[in-house]
Length: 239
Length: 184
Image 1 (tube, chains in turn purple, yellow):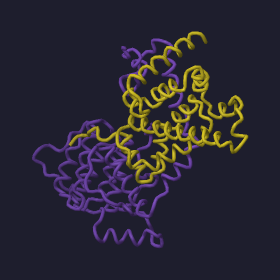
Image 2 (cartoon, chains in turn cyan, orange):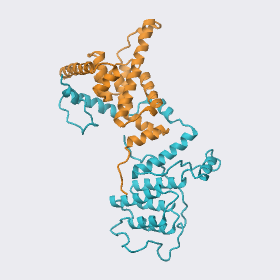
Image 3 (cartoon, helix red, strand yellow):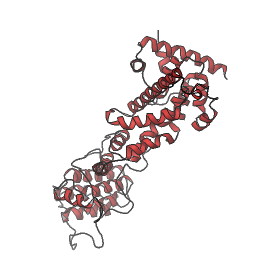
Image 4 (cartoon, chains in turn purple, cyan):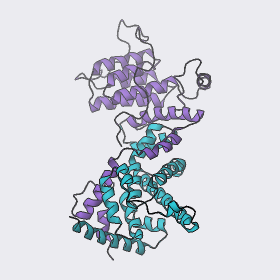
């Protein structure tokens, strides 16, 4: 018996693009599926969701790290060395003692990882310049820091693919080399970021702090997560 | 370094859900909860709400045993719904044999309350059409429609020969085609 015809009715969006319903059966099946898929999460799933979300102390740390990792991976497709990002706890919080202990043994780059995830989010939201400024806060090398900031200035509000890719490259490098960042490499990559009609520095120029500028964190800037930005699955992810 | 396509949204949500992230669980359930409810409705499940609740809990408990992509997850979830439904049918038929409770033996009223609670017009209509098919035919077609299982997968699931499930699908679709034409 040839069941090929019958099987065609059941092909789905996963197999190929949406097909024109050719007859009653196909339309019938397609309508049933799309109706079910459009339904809100059933109230009868709430207990299960609560069960799935209840997590142990260690589980909560992992969730934080997973969210940070997820933000990085989703933007750049690459990831290295992210462990527990258990910061954000203040003295007196239950997690505070463990935060410090983890940092002391060098597990996770703590603030660095979270800062990078936030920078990635900013880039993803179309604010590559702010992302670079944010990333500049975690770079120790003054030359690299200045190069990142001047790249931010150079790209302004630009959000072209080239720019996006160049910025992504820098952030990926920073995440993959946490703890062993080569300032010269960062400065070079920052200099190569293609900006608003202004090409990166011409060959032969060594990136470095502009004359008259004292390297160091910009005045009035306290390193810390910008308000309203939290690592996690990027906004707008639709099922 | 260039942007790569990397893991899919599904892969990331699956991993986060495993780690206990509530938003990711909601994302995963958004994929399948409607399908599970509709599946149980078209199969005429009596205690659809209870079976659905048990299905969803089972999915959470078993998530570490799952591997695969989004499509696999949909199929997997619907096979769990199928198994919980089978358990529920066995349990209620056992109760009827023992004759414990007269209330169990009553035919439940045409499920007006359940149907409006379900809120799915097409599924409700399909349920009425499927009442004209045999239970075996409905079993195969519901898994095909909502779980998107292949016939070999269904044969394995139901522990039936492939020829049998193919025939059930074929006869079920013939019946449906006639019913759909008649109802228009």
